[in-house]
Image (tube, rainbow, N blue to C red; front, side, top):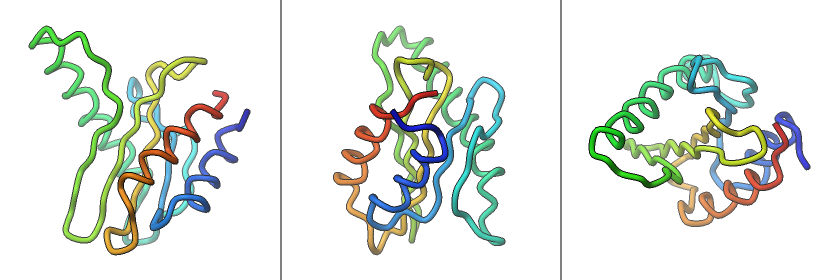
Length: 124
């Protein structure tokens, strides 16, 4: 079982093109852990802002009566991919892993696969 810091380090080291990662509580908007980012890319702000994305999607699904679970949410930018993976089980309720990928180096299918594996090993 990996703790938050170990899981975030694994995100950046094992996922090709990963430049930043965070574990975020979408009920409060607080990042429980971050790794990466830069002066130009404030990971704390990005993590907090993406809580609105998650909340909005969950609210919309509720209004539509969808009884599905969100696996992940993908946001594509010109040069980046932002991947949000909602956690399930072992205290993961209300949490998501947030991953920023360099679009020129990332393989989305592999990133999703690796993120699923990291989630399975994460102990919150």
